[in-house]
Image (cartoon, rainbow, N blue to C red; front, side, top):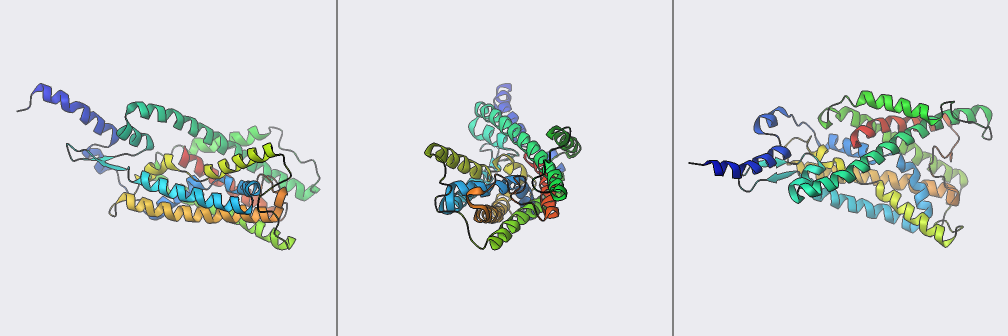
Length: 343
């Protein structure tokens, strides 16, 4: 028979299991219906942001060799990283043989590295989520303001003093915040597949428009602009700073480790969740890299050393104004879903 001392020894293990996974009764209440397609929608929503439209500037700093090479390199790093992290979703307790589901990044950190590492990691995750939330809000406001400016330039000419509304960007930020208050009522990833699919379609839309506008501009110019080493009309210090910034922008455009395990927790099995997640990751990164290379390289080929920081809000393109407006609208609609997926 087991004594009171034995009960005390087993309590910490039971507590640890209860924090990292559902108990058996709760586990049956969770219906995991996700597939490789829904996982791809979640990943693309979390990864492809409006930053794809600024990659042309990054390529302009790195040149025709460094720019594409950096994108392919970070794509490869992300595939390896996501594959390793996908294997952390399911763990087994060696004593009880029970399955432990790590439903979030911090759950996996706590199980494998301990509570101190979880607290340390959780702090930086909080800072990261705060930063990404601010970026999403500012970017959506810039895109909404760009729609207003594009219409103004179309009516009054490209040299017209078009400005934002009386409330400035704050008005657009408020609208974005109100929309997020409504979308935040969606409880979790299990219930937001439709939103991720919608947001992924929007990201494909504005990425394709940026891709197409860049290609059309190259055809119109009749020449491919740019150089092997990128922009040269800057000082050595400025060059180093810009190259570092460009590499940072490209590196930041790929990872989705903070939400990978939450996405994996929506997948049904069989097949094993990790196998489905790895397949979705590889396909999503391939699609993402295709659009990154297209927008970045065609944007640089179209504008050369004059490549703007953002192909749409930087007014690299004025016409057709309705297409630029549509692309910026797609950016805003994507960020509405992307904010929920990342935060």
